[in-house]
Image (cartoon, rainbow, N blue to C red; front, side, top):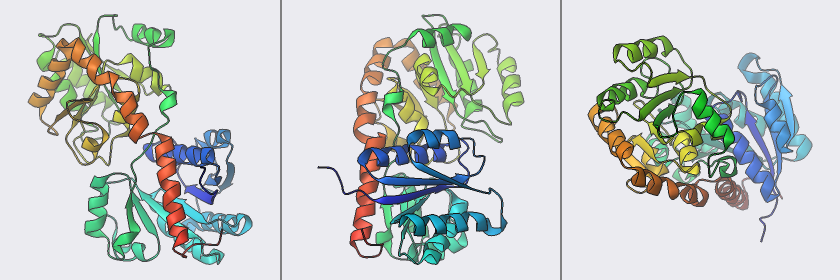
Length: 378
């Protein structure tokens, strides 16, 4: 039985290709598949505006820069009134208060839902007032714990729904494009390729320096291993110098980020996610699992929620180069273990982290909130 269709406004004032933008897009697509009416409001010129339009959602734009996001508020208020929006859902931190004000100004009783994609402590006004005016969704239990500790107000307005990805995008077997990608990067067919996928911004990125240190420790014992850092950021020069100083020239390389992430994931043999800062969940681990690749990741914040230790991959203490090197060597020399861990990953993501699961759980939350009488009529 299909859920009763709802009228939803998804807002994202950045929408230029980050993880939060991916989630906005995947949630909107999943809600459309359920039969909901979805309007997306994004800033004019957003890099991912064309992708939003491809979904089949109604897409509205507004000037990206205005005092206190007044242009955004005017646009959202107009859309709420014009389309009798029941739920306004915001995803970026600078959209929280404009979304609440737009809902109030519309006079339609629209319910505001905000997804928190970060582990960091909310700002002062958010901590003391937001729960009285909106419902918060945490993308992991780790984020939920932060919100329950920091936010003041009705605790029942804090909810937890994991992120979701479009698993159908990812390849179940390597195709000609994947083999070409490996060949382009100098990876022989028998190479075991470890890769970190993500930005590398100072001071430590996503743990890329630790990854290279671990690579240097296992290189001599595992001559078939290759190491890839895929992304971009301010640490590039330092990482290139580190590759040279560690004697990893020829086996480690930095590769620009590619939008063809399913090809990248399939080309790797093991996804390494050695995060050292904070991590709400780790979408990149889900993408690797959906590609049938085992993962090695930091036991940090929400990352352990994304896979089962020993079944889909291995967890290591964040920043522990010795433990990281040991985990990498273990998977490098045991092809059957890599295959066994990777084989169960896609089913795990399909069952727990697909965009269909994300959309269904979010739709059900919307319906529950409206049933309480705080939203607009159906």
